[in-house]
Image (cartoon, rainbow, N blue to C red; front, side):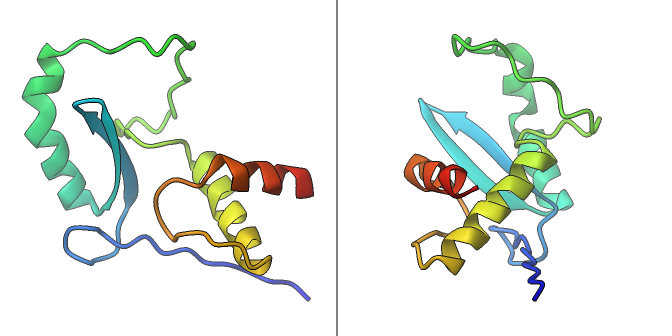
Length: 116
């Protein structure tokens, strides 16, 4: 029997359908938010002046390759999103606690990797 899991992103600001997940940070804390195109533009416009005058912090790791979408996305690549959707679906099927949004624990990612 085939099983299909469909994940729908909901805009965290107004409850409409979200187009993307954006990761951003301030004061040493990282945040993730799902936004539609209008609210994503508002967020980017709000921080654009600060970003233009800021410098990137080195993480000590080599930089990740650009997603190639040309839209200036801040979140992970589409493959990352699909992988996390698969991990969440697997966790639910195996009665493991997992949220619909946000970070997936390293423990859960490791368990998924072991099972596959």
